[in-house]
Amino acid sequence: MRILLTADLHYRPSQRDTYLAFAHWVAAQQPDCFIICGDVGHPLRLFRRALQLFAGLSCPRLLVPGNHDLYRDQYDSRTLWETVLPEATRNEGFVWLENEVVTLPLDTQESREAVGRVLEQLGICGTMAWYDYSAGPSDLGYTADDYRHLKAMVNHDADYVDWPWSDVAMARYLSRRCGEHLRSLVEDPTVRQILVVTHMPVFEQAIPRHPESGIWRLLSAYMGNLTLGALLQATPKVTHVVSGHVHRPGHWTVAGEHGPIDFRLIGSQKGAPAAVVLDFPGWPATGAETEV
Image (tube, rainbow, N blue to C red; front, side, top):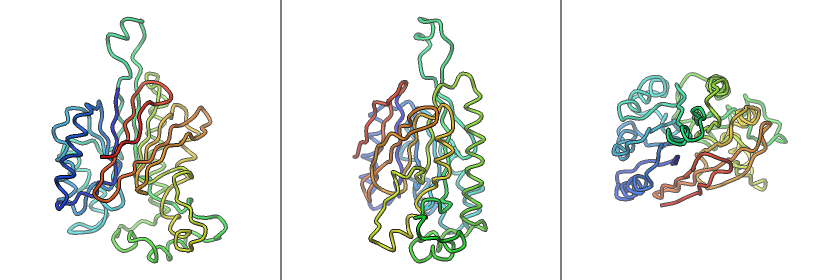
């Protein structure tokens, strides 16, 4: 089974030929599942047009949103989050992973009959993984209130995300719901492995560290959610995690309490969409970072 994941498309009409070429490349890989890990396009009309690029795929298409998708325009961020983006996602044939899990068979009917085994599945769950400041340098000594007030100095989320919740409250809410989805997959006896997809990274390896720069040291607090990463490390069956957001590729093996976790970053750049291809079943995955 082949899963193809991308992120940070930031769809721009002026570069439509590039996006069309990428969509054609995706189709040529004949994926069994296609996943977008956030920052699809903004405003809403570009979010929709980006999803329409992949309308020809016959496989399941899944999505988690990114922070840029929630920037206010004709709708405020709360309305985008609660109703408008989920509805647009469903209307374009995608699954809004914030609200549900997906399971896919890891083997074929023929292979199961040949060895007399029961169906084994890959469970997929995902979340935006909003930042809770856990990625900030511990030696700064800043409180959550400090980070809230300082965010406008380095991060445009402070200007364009206008929902009523604090960063910490939103991160806690999303992590709790992701935990519920994980438990449902862990308790499913047919699920052998779990793939978790996020927009913001959840492991330390992905956070850019520039100790010589005061701006980068502060900015790192808004780049990931390491609290959620700790939850994933403690969860049985989690074998793969894929994230976007920081616009650089990466591939690490992260230690988990129940075995190693294959962790990848999707390194899309401006005008250059990238993808990660994972081939299941088995550990480790045979996929590699691919740019178009």
